Length: 97
Picture 1 (cartoon, rainbow, N blue to C red):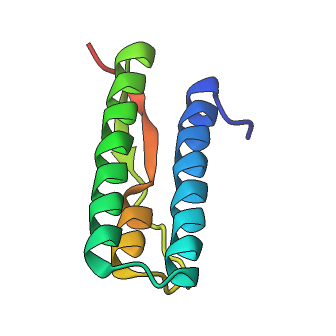
Picture 2 (picture 1 turned 180 degrees about the vertical axis):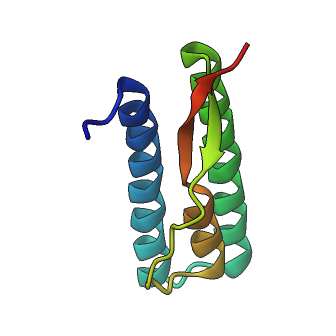
């Protein structure tokens, strides 16, 4: 089954934020970044992600659901792992009013 335009847009948002999180995780590991800074950056990215998804929801008129079957075998920093866990928005099947 081919993905709808909405599904492709949400997939792009999710994939972009996942790539950013993984990129930053690698940088943090390489440069032995302070734990508090990692948490601050991950929390800020999470806020930006939610605002972006909210804007998409307003533009597309679709609801947003979570795909809770998003288990990975990665072992990044807990802040990055938490960020990756929330990057699972999908468009709902019904239009919101």
